[in-house]
Length: 207
Image 1: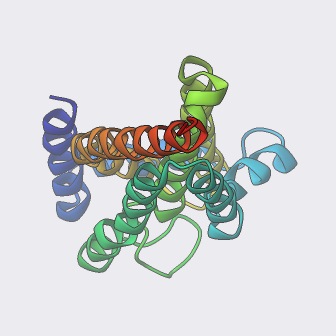
Image 2: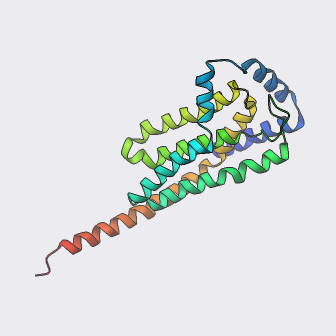
């Protein structure tokens, strides 16, 4: 249901951006109003959360930790979700070829930094959730993804619809990601149970 709604909204937003519709005109007016708002250091910091040099190492540590703890299938599922981001984002960037807010360069829709931050930090929450409490971890991850997009707009690195389109594209990953994580949980659970049984048998006296 979530993925279907995101698909419809992403199609609408993408059509408006590509065709130069009224939604794109309103988006650019909003963007010009938002540029430069807020404390520069804070908004720059928020925008930087989407850099691959920041988000990917954080995710890599979480993936490595989860694999070390025996949740290898779950770690692989999250890593694959991250790997899918450029496969989804880059073709749309090339097709839409949207010019950036403060530059003549193009390829700004959807925002790759927003997608990277959203998937990376939500992936960390999913991997660390069993230990930190998913109820606490996931809201923090969502806030970080949202803050990244807001920072990118306020610094003039992206139009608002670039960020919104990226969030919707990440929503399309929701259904396959949940299915992959359920499969990973069952696989990891079976593996951990098998290792526990073997250790138990090894400690049992043979007489």
